[in-house]
Length: 482
Image (cartoon, rainbow, N blue to C red; front, side, top):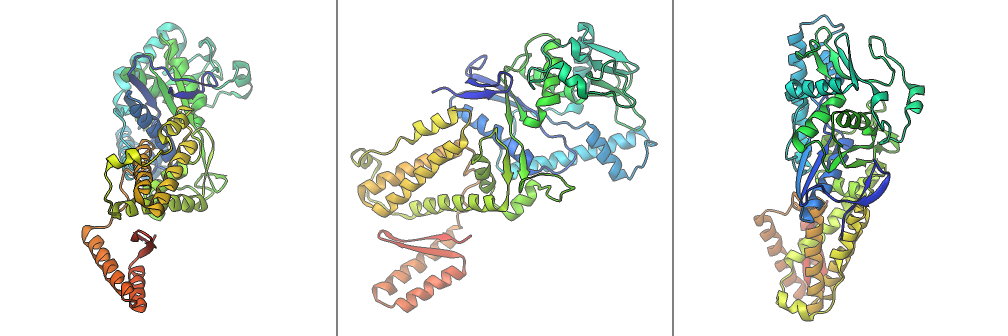
């Protein structure tokens, strides 16, 4: 079975074929660190976490690079707000230091949020500020030499009309783009479509020395520079949110290919996220951070299940109703795991060979994920495995044992590929488990003696302590009440 991915560049789902198998090179646009990460950031990070995990599952050696934009207009504005600056009359070093402080603080916030979600760090996480000179300035110099860039009083621009194939990624023609383009006050570009590679220094803003004078890089040149530095001129996959297709990724292609060789071979974009049907924004009061979600829904798998239920390219709407549904799904998985672990069986794995036939969950799972990361279908396989496991608990005997074990191993293996169950299932401490088991044993004695009132008192006491008892033909099992 072969992985197929939708390539934004070709507008079709196509077979994924890396340049140098078994190595896969992947670059994803990371955060601009000027605020705490919201659930839209979490969704994008999780989409590429799943892609990375699945590629690894299929035997590829993935090199995953995700940048950090730590110099940007938004960071500068945030620093000004924190310094309560009303104008630009400020010493450069003061604002530059504040910008660095803001960026470092919110990068730490981003890392902590992704860690709480149980997401893996990238193999490399280059910062823009650490690659301005000589990396970005050298890249810009190459574009000037090639003739697709020009200098204008300390600024450097990319001439879009000189970039062959511009608009191919976003599906827009240069003429179409021209109709909505304009030159902003203070810009020195020759054509409204042109975009900045280097911005001349403004009073008080962070800046670096360059052949064109003091200044700072444009946003687009940052990713072109860092992706090719660490992955080579041509690499396998470039990812990000669909909102980055234009102008950011379109401009990345223009810069990189004008500098010499073909750029990323495949482009993967995740859909946007709304909250209760509305675009997320602070003005609407629905800006939802990762920390806020985890405060209300503590286990990260709740949010991951919500993400997995929607195809990565589709828009996703966040709501409490959907989060509660995801929490119920997770509790069902956890309940099965706990009961499975409590059952004492006299059967061995060898008995499974003669116990019958079980569904081929592996084939179904891989067929789903191979078809453009169809996680809703892959998740359906896990739910089917859960159903089989629950039936196995009720059925008992050798066949029930087979169903339970097959379901248990399938859910854990494929759930792990989807990024689930990485932070455990909040298993109770050994002393708590022992206490509950003693209470169950005492209750069983009372029931056998037909002292049902006293037996019910034990059940009710455990319920008050947050534990629910389930009586089955194979014994009594327990789980924590959420």
